[in-house]
Length: 205
Image (cartoon, rainbow, N blue to C red; front, side, top):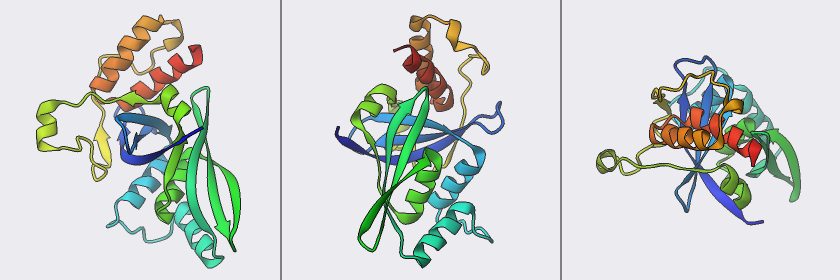
């Protein structure tokens, strides 16, 4: 299976659901985005790692891990998102010490927070991107002002209301309706909602 390298496009949050965040990953040589729902602490840790100007007065958990690894000459070489089961992404951290490589299981949010601190590349397998990736429809007018459309520096993107209740039970909806809702959510840049709908579609396929 071929690996696809990803970069971080941003983090979106919900103004209606406390603690709900979506980390937006993008394939480097393509148009697809991979939204991953993460917790508030992990979202904060990733945002701080992206924003170089922010220096916490005391090390966060992921900073502590980085300091610990540096002290014992452990290097994170890369992170691989290797599995998707029932909407949950599974990741591995590839580490090296004394030229000996080790593979460590990790939550995807933790793995990415560490990859940023070690400046390590993030990968996933093509079949996972085929299954869970979504295409972003770019607004041409907005694209003229901002070619990247969603910049890494734009760490938090306000959620746009799609008119769909946040607590909707997707299990009772037909596939045609789910696909329509997914298209609308992506068009409105509501990646958190798109991730939830996509997970329901993935369960049925």
